[in-house]
Amino acid sequence: MSDETVIIHARFAANGTIAEISERPQGLNPQEWFDFLSYRSADKYQALAGGRGVFRLTRAEVEASKVDAATKAA
Image (cartoon, rainbow, N blue to C red; front, side, top):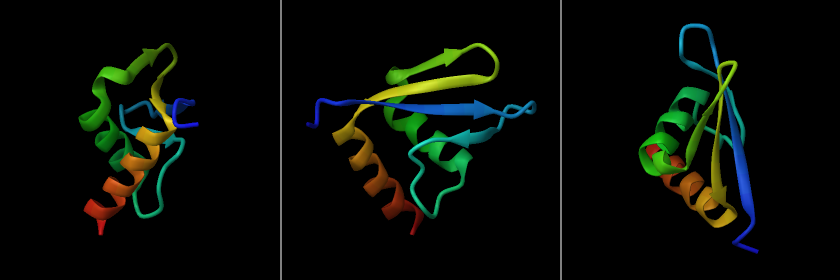
């Protein structure tokens, strides 16, 4: 089921940094995970009202991103 769409929710703090983001791999703080996804999948990000946003990715893209991010963080 790699075609399954995963929605990664991000919530911003008042100063513009990331307060929370879903599907975050261990070893990365919320801002690092958001930055990584923004660089890799900027075309799949949608800004929402109220200091929120979402990435819409396939399950395969999320898993590949987690592996790549963990490798670069190590």
